[in-house]
Image (cartoon, rainbow, N blue to C red):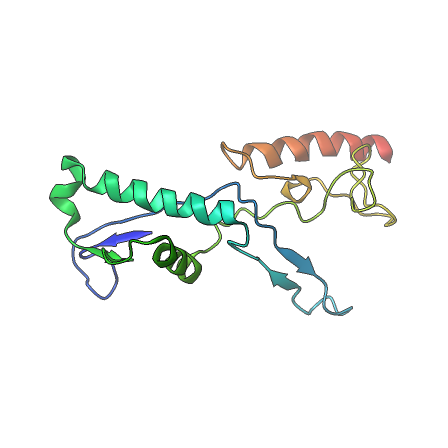
Length: 170
């Protein structure tokens, strides 16, 4: 994110912030069950920016946003860049900023791999869990990657198709 004069809560003035995102990262996190107590939170390691391609994408995106903000239409209102600040120019500077500020875009998926291989947990023919009776999965958790378009459409389709498979299996 690039933030300009007035864009932060501390400034309380007029300003704006503009984000860059890597919607299809190469880095892969981990989700593990740390306890057999269902009330215990799972162990989550997002492993963000582990892949060099993700760091390159964010650096390139930040540099493109800076170039965009120098265009006449935005330059009139941009003022001074507050975050990461104009001094953050090298790859290392931008990587440090990205590591400090990177967050999720809140579209979790891929936590219940669908397939027939040893690592798959959902059977594509029935939407049932491998080795678990009475469990069906028909949501974004079976998606291997985030879609490039609307993130609501794919899980709706998965749910609709999954409902038919689940119904047929009953």
